[in-house]
Image (cartoon, rainbow, N blue to C red; front, side, top):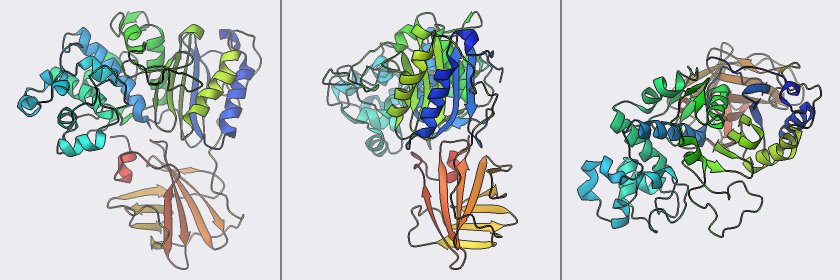
Length: 455
C-alpha cells in the first residue's frame, strides 16, 4: 500500500500536546480500547500509533464503516451512468416486480436507500432475511414501510445491502472488483477483503477488512472533494452531496451533545464537527473540513461517543495553536494492549484437550486444546494460535495473538483476533480439563470464529 506522506505536528500547525492528551484520554477510559490511530493534517500523517499486537499492515474488520466505501462505489456508478439516484430501487430487480405490491415499497428510490430513508421505522435485517428466505434485498421490498419513503430516518442495514446489490448487478462484477481499478488501486490500497452472504452478494453494510491507512486515505479523498494526487477520483460534487444531511436523525429535532443526532447523508453521519463514517465498537473515519484534518481510528470501544468526545476535547483545540514535542509521532514506539492479569505464578502449561465447563458463554466452541506450544480452538473448524511466554503477546503465522497468566491453579488465556476488534477470553482448569470462554465484546453477525478473518 502506497503510504501517505509523513510530517510532524508542529510543521502542520498542531500542538502535539493535544495529540498526547487524546492518546492519554483514549487509553484511560474503561469502555475504550484503542487499536490504532492516525491523524492527518494538510494531507500528511502527523501522528500514528498502533497498540501491540495490532500492526499497521494488518487489515481490520471495520463493521459499518464499510458503508462509506459503498457510498464511494455508488458515486462512481452514478457517474458512469450505471445507476440513477431517482430511479425506483425495485426497477433494478425485475424478477421481484410481481411479488412486491405495496405502493410505498415500490416507490423507494435509490437515494432513499443511500440516506437510510426507506420509510421503515427500524432496522429490518432479521425480518428481511426471513421474508426473503435469505435474500435480504427481496425481504426488504416485501416489508411495507411504515412511512412514505424519504420521510424518516432508520439505520436500516438492508438499505446499504441493496445498494451494493444494485452496483454488482449493473456493473456485472463484485463490489471489490468494481472498486479495485476505480478506488483501491488509485489510492494505493492493496490489502482488502469483503464478506459475502449465502446468496453470493457482497454485504456492503459491513464485512470490509482494510488497514487503518486505507481508512485514512478514504477520509483524505473526501476531504479533498474526491481528488487524489491531482486527479478527480470521485465525481465532481459527489462528496458534497454524499456528506450533507439528507434526513434528520433525531425526530425531536434536538441535537444536544450526541454526534448521532446531526443528520445523515449518503452512508455518512454528520457530526458536531465535520462528518464521519463509523463502525461498531469504535471504527472511525472522521473528516474535519474546517481544520483540514482527518482522523482514522480502530478500536474495541462500546462507548463510541466517548471516543468522539475525546477528539473534540483534546484534538480540535490543538490545531493551529502552536506546537511542542510529542511521543505521538511514533518515536516512543507503540503501546500494548492489556494482557490477562494473574497472580504472577509461572509454570509449564499442561498439554491436552479441554471441554466446556458449566459457565461457558460460547456454546459453539466445542473444545480448547493445548499441544506443541499451540492453542487449538475448535468450533467446527480448527483455529490454531501460537503460545509464547507470559510476559508479552505472541503472534504466530495466523492473524491471532495470545497472552496468558496463571491465577492459582487456573490458566487465563486471551486470544486477540487481529483482523477484527475482538478478543476471546479463556479460563482453563487443568485439573478438571474444562474451559470457560467469553467474548470481551461479542462479534456482530458472526457464526464461526474464522468469519473474523479477512475473506
